[in-house]
Image (cartoon, rainbow, N blue to C red; front, top):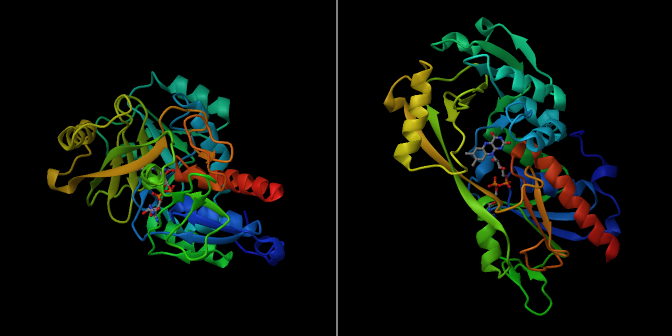
Length: 361
Ligand SMILES: Cc1cc2nc3c(=O)[nH]c(=O)nc-3n(C[C@H](O)[C@H](O)[C@H](O)COP(=O)(O)OP(=O)(O)OC[C@H]3O[C@@H](n4cnc5c(N)ncnc54)[C@H](O)[C@@H]3O)c2cc1C
């Protein structure tokens, strides 16, 4: 995708421009707003100024390498759609090396991963463990691979994505918390906080999406889920590193420290004490723990569909034709990206839905 907004791309059909309101100015809301503006819509994107998941996550641009044997559909979507991120936004946000490392404590699981990588076509190179961040680990890795994942500085990525949206003609309101209302008779959604109600509304409010829908009286099948992780102060690694056998420890470089994460157990995380102890033990096991004072537990929240695993990296509900369990609302589209890695793909799907609406009207 070119970052340079052209006349042609940003100002299509000015007479027929329909007003679109995007609620939420995280990476997904901004990607949707930008894509809609580039396709000729008159777009207002409203954020409430709070940092959502887009400003507080692991900052990993996933290639799918880590997920390939366990969640092949998610892995394939990451591999296919991460390139939708414009280089001009990603490159200045890069932290550490422009690739990551997949490490194995033992060689047993290597074959399974190698087969899955080959199946999807993920570009992976086996290297000597001595050339990887495993040099610092005890015991050292038995096998190491260079994988096309890397870490970004989320503040830089978000600021540049916001500036890009503005350059593409998106009007941005950054300190406005909006509410939605659904008219019982017409089933149309209105936005009481705005004087000029838009023709179409896209809800991209991250973890707040289920609450906003519920307060508007719109039935849905979304839920919030909390994710535990840790900051490891003063231990900034050179590159994003995953240990793929055993506990699946992930370590991402950030400004000055490391973001350390473990997968959930049966889809859920435990108490503060349990999660702190799990992460601490994973670092101790590899000789990477510095001191308890350097390790602090953090929590993030994601929004996700309760049941479906159909499109796990971007769930889009077009309420003209609502999915099972959802109310009808003919001018509302709900977007849940799953990963910021696939935000532009999610945006593409949302704007395709908006364009269908424009053709019908
Ligand atoms: C701990 C953690 C780690 C993760 N790691 C990764 C990773 O490494 N790689 C990856 O690709 N994905 C990762 N994810 C997922 C990724 O962060 C999210 O999928 C993505 O950031 C969601 O973007 P969003 O724009 O939909 O939501 P958000 O970034 O949450 O943005 C929604 C915005 O809407 C605002 N808002 C809410 N209500 C209103 C309202 N009424 N009016 C106006 N504004 C409102 C919120 O304050 C927020 O600013 C992670 C998530 C978590 C929680």
